[in-house]
Image (cartoon, rainbow, N blue to C red; front, side):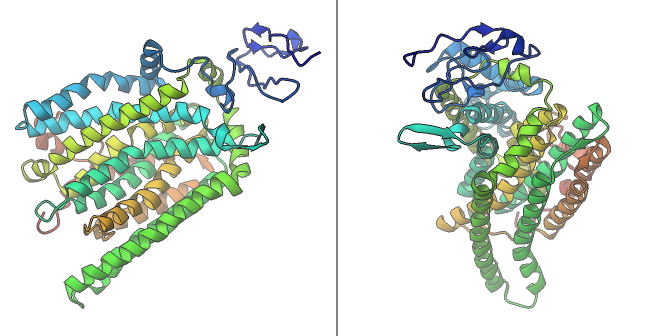
Length: 496
């Protein structure tokens, strides 16, 4: 009567709105209804009965504040799915990997192996913390404020959440690229490894991750459908990115032997820098397209995808990290990833020269597999839960970020550091990339997927690089990964 509201009754499915009858509640799982104050339309309780803080999405409300160490550790270990939780058993490798670097610097192979393994759980933590953060932040981005009153955009949170998760998942890759670039010198040129890692990351997403998504989803259903708004925009951007990455190497190879090589390399470097600026702008144009001008198109697709998740009620009922805990988790994970990246990169020269692992194999296969672990697990879990649009958005979004943002960023930063970082890829690498884009684009054309298409994508990735010789190279088969026949045998460039 005087603006006060009777405390909401809490049922098994969440609090009842004032005046709502219990018979109207669906008891099959937690409700995603909004409950508001009558005078200012502020939501006060979410599906778990937690009071929702201002500016926080209801499904991201934890019901707690600040940091609770036991809750923090338990929630982080539980992670987002069972497979992701299984990855957390690798956390015991993190501390020994750091200690061994300082205690036994002569054990180069073991330092490489331990830090490589340790990057997997730390990268997984970045991905999980990004998901938890995305549950909370998008509503802040997706609303207007006028005179203190908040008017939310319906469903405006989906695109922002995916963009945020994809960006945080790509931090591992950015850190690795920057460390490789910093360590690169005339005597120890790591630019070929960076170039191979750029293409390897794209291939790992397009073929391996997308293949597992199609395969996992196809095991439970005859076919899965996805919207053309996700697939067409993604495949179109990939073609543009592939064209941009192709130009410098095509220019170099077509004029090689007809012009002075020193002048030709200088021109290729200039072309790469101009191309990188254009790709950099294209990335933010795509982000603006998704989050601002056309977010309604994406949100409608992703909202319908949420309804297909039969386990969504379980996901909503899980304990959540607080906003502060999300930031702490991201900070810890980035610090660990940075240390492991530095220690890993320091051993690359030994791995290439003493263990005879080619630059192509190291960049195309080993580096992308570890940096994309968290994103891949998330996407495959979404496909398994019949959320193929979410899975495609994560896979294509991560691929586009690598092709448009990360590749251009490393060239621009190298420009500032006076490093000769260019986009002059080996012919083998760039041909494989273009063929992969064509193959995936053909699979996406009918807006349907099945396990056969997934298996074919995985087979194409294996053709690019698996070899039993990796067992010999790493001493007794300690590291056996999906890799590539051709990239394993592909020789290093002259001088490497």
